[in-house]
Length: 222
Image (cartoon, rainbow, N blue to C red; front, side, top):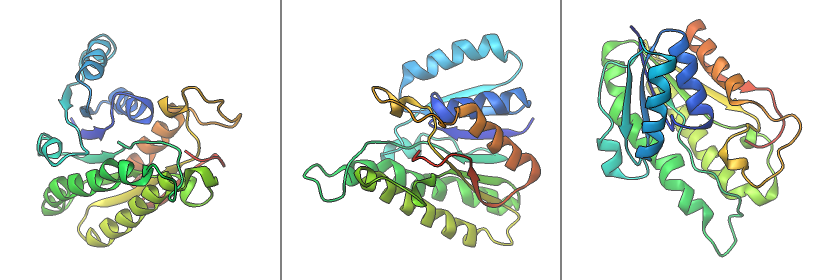
């Protein structure tokens, strides 16, 4: 049975991806920082996917200690989905960029350094990163968040270069606005994506071996 590791796996795009891969017969290592969310996910999982292994991992990926809790296994796919979201400008008094930097950039960087060398050594596997169309078109009050997504996009390009000719594939999936918990107390745009739509694209790029940047329809900021 093929194995996928998914960060931010209990909500939104991560949860949809976990269920999408499970439906396709993959075992799932689900990483999230809240134990109660993972327990709820596990309870639902046992009813919906009784024959599909779920390995729930409690880890705060914004910390070095949290990164060390993620097990190093023979993953076929590493899906870097975990990210924080908050509106804010770069020059406002509250430093939103610095708050988001630890998870959105450094967390992904550190986890990639922990897990990708093993894929490269085995000469197989697939790295999938969830980005955002915000790096193409964004609103002024979200410049801090988008700056972290720009940094993540830059990291992806670096990983892609490092993995070139290694046998490990790399894909950046960039959705538009997606209906996740970040939209609580806000009115979502009419063209907002469902997380399942994004998850289906993620599974498709893995099944077809698609690499590079894949934009999922939607013109608003994710």
